Length: 100
Image 1 (cartoon, rainbow, N blue to C red):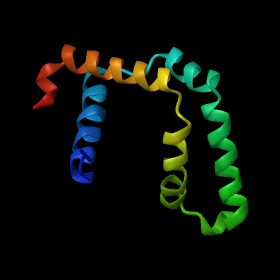
Image 2: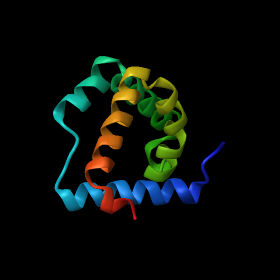
Image 3: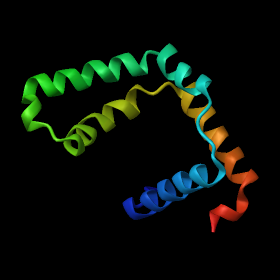
């Protein structure tokens, strides 16, 4: 079942609001996991390819994000995605009042 874009946007806003309200941030280890599995380097290289191909003056940030998002999702390691999902569930369980 596909989640609608509006629902995704609402979820993203709730997550961002919750993180802001609690002063929380992703622990440094989370960023290291993305780097260790090669995701960060591969996605950075893909960004460079897109910008080089189209020219920096023809790639607004929104367009670049739209272009690289599918590849970023495909490159994400299952263990890192699983850990991120676990952390989000824990966060929301601890801050249930933010779920509305």
